[in-house]
Amino acid sequence: MNLSIVIPAYNEAESLPELTAWIEQVVAANNYSYEVIFIDDGSRDGTWEVIEQLSAKNSHIRGIKFQRNYGKSPALNEGFKLAQGDYVVTMDADLQDSPEEIPGLIATLEEGNYDLVSGWKKVRHDNKLTKNLPSKLYNGVTGKLSGIKLHDMNCGLKIYRKNVIKSIEIFGEMHRYIPVLAKSAGFNRIGEKVVIHQKRKYGVSKFGMERFVNGFLDLSTVLFISRYGRKPMHLFGLWGTLLFLLGFFITVYLMVSKLFWHTPITTRVPFYLALTVMILGTQFFLAGFIGELISRNSADRNQYLIEKTL
Image (cartoon, rainbow, N blue to C red; front, side, top):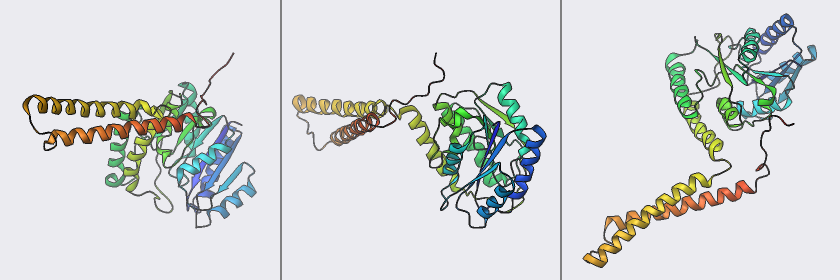
């Protein structure tokens, strides 16, 4: 199979028939063997019934129905589990992502020998104050911290090689950081292509301003897991040791001043500073130690991605 198209949908019953017809035109024009995987993320507007009708008419269409609304990340994760195409494309169900971009994404992926290519909605039809400006800030910070230079990290229109999506797990709200997850798994060839952003035709956006706060919190999680997920002691142990040593040297200073100059210890500010940093240092060290115990006993502690064997 050439192509798997994974599409999460939440209350998008109006747009799915038009989107499906659009996809069918594109794959027919390019002679792709394909599948479309719709994930109904707990919709309440008849989205699942529409998916059932579309699947009955076209055997290439598959569907997953969640019991309730879990979010885009779980939807993509389940879609990736089912995907069998050599190329896996993700797109939104609201008709703002154009299926006509798929051939160009495949060409960019192959020409650049990339592992994944992310769309860049260079010209957007969103509210500049509530979406465009925060998105630029978000992409700038993410690029600086992750080292991945993409103009539109959160663009829903992306293409992956099959081995990429089979090697990562998406949870929480990590769909924003799939390129970061892919990089941490060893897929460093990440490209970008300018894509057309369509105006919303049906419904309203399902994402509010809170996504930016949650996005930066999730970025912290991704960066921590990718760098210290298998070696937490390298972070917590280092800071714990430094804090404890700082408190220890302050304590030595107080003892020397008491011994030679008879100055009090417990009534001085440095005493409480030393006590605080030594307690914090001990807690950090223990957190790292417990993290190591959890990591060493994890079922996937020795699961690594092997690209080739001879």
